[in-house]
Image 1 (spheres, rainbow, N blue to C red):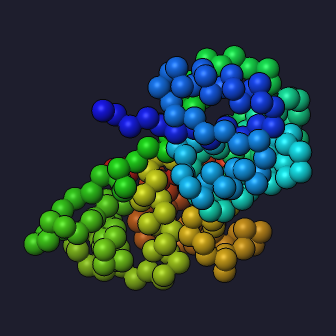
Image 2: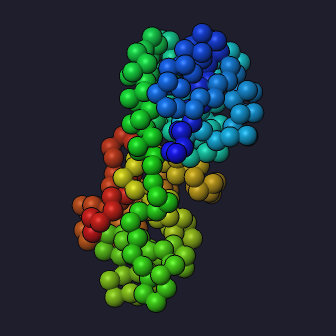
Length: 242
């Protein structure tokens, strides 16, 4: 039997929680519900959901604060919900790591479609399609542009199987992308996933390291095809493009 995907609904209105729980349950989802940030954290400590539906206008800790809390600790999709179609809220929500935004009142069918979309975006088998390492089928290797990333030995190899020098931070960056192919990652998401607080999101250090990595993996670093820039959003690893 296929495991149900779990949705965490965080909303202070009981009627909305009950309506969404009934609707999503009838469409094959398992629903957890919380009416506050405190209740949300207690549920997250017991069971990590597949997606979070988070109301912006919560009493006490608002949804933007809670979105930041989730993004710092978990790698899962967040859909923000607000009663007012405020552009500022929408922009801030996306900046703190939300994946999508929905305005109340909304059609539950639209919500279900958006949930499916963000879940597809986050689905991954662990790493991008890998090739067996010669003489050791258990090692994980990921084609990365004109190179190959050996995740187990923490090495980047060229076409002749020679090691290309990497700093620890550069390997961490490549691993983040290898485990999340075809997904746009913001600078904040990269920082939170790696837990590397030496990186300052304001000094563009991530951009500098990606530029250096492109010189090592791209056939043409000036026209990157493997580590692509997504204007206004971040970066995306596109497998098998080298």
